[in-house]
Image (cartoon, rainbow, N blue to C red; front, side, top):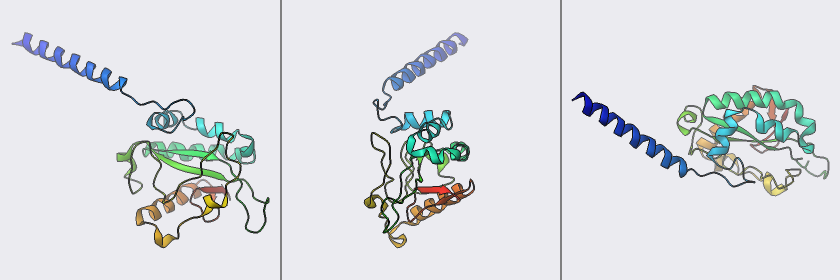
Length: 196
């Protein structure tokens, strides 16, 4: 009898090894130039807190906000424990109403869900791994040369009474989380923040 159990365990171990190898070969890896668009990029981002943050803050349009690196890395590390990752999208200039060319750079931020089960303890709504946290509208997208200016179309936000309770909760949660690191929301956007 003991010989059968050893054989059975060996068979199970072999099957599990083959299953793991098969699953690894089916993994979806984002193509070059789309780093961070999928789960693989976000897990790498959480594994090395602040790597992407430092890279984005080294861009010319972000130089005036480079001093916020430690604060953003702290938020990123805190979110990693909750199954999420902070994404710094860039540092666009927000136009001041009626005063073209007078905008100041802001931090364009978003939150990516890395582990939806853990994230569900902190935030609400659909929490698919590798997707942005639901904030009710899209964050601005960075172009090939980064994000220097955000058009007025990107600033259009639906009124609060048109947003779901989950979205309102998530927006307030993000504001509080960033306020704890000395960052304030800018304008009517959910994604733009600047130092106090």
